[in-house]
Image (tube, rainbow, N blue to C red; front, side, top):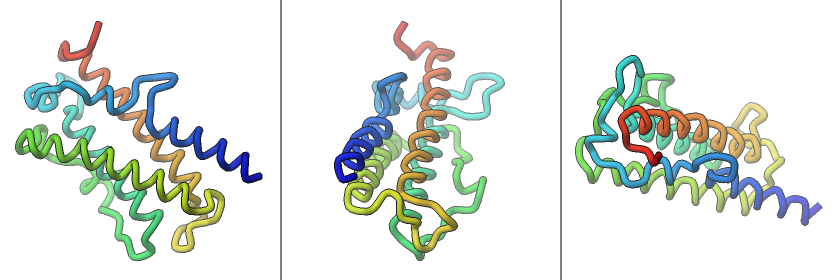
Length: 158
């Protein structure tokens, strides 16, 4: 069983890192200007900045929930989505990207140190395995939206 858990952990790390069957979040967010992340194409509800910040907030919430029984989640949906179309500065944009990466690394470390199958004591049946799959699914969903916006604004490789 120990070997199976090790195999599962390695696969989850790959899944959380993105790539494989599709573009990963890191690649989708790479080499963008403030102007590009601040554009909201016609008929779409979000800019790249808003999507990245939403990913950061949701991923952070799942991480904190997984490790802290006293964690209070933001109010859904308004506190999960920034109202501003653009970040305040390039520094704010870079901080969002860095936070996504740091929180993901922390979640992976948490997975390595705990039993993936045990229910989170303060949850309602959630496990670290479920949270890992939810982070991967959520990030992949919004990564696809980021790539689409990049295509629409001419900021994606051909």
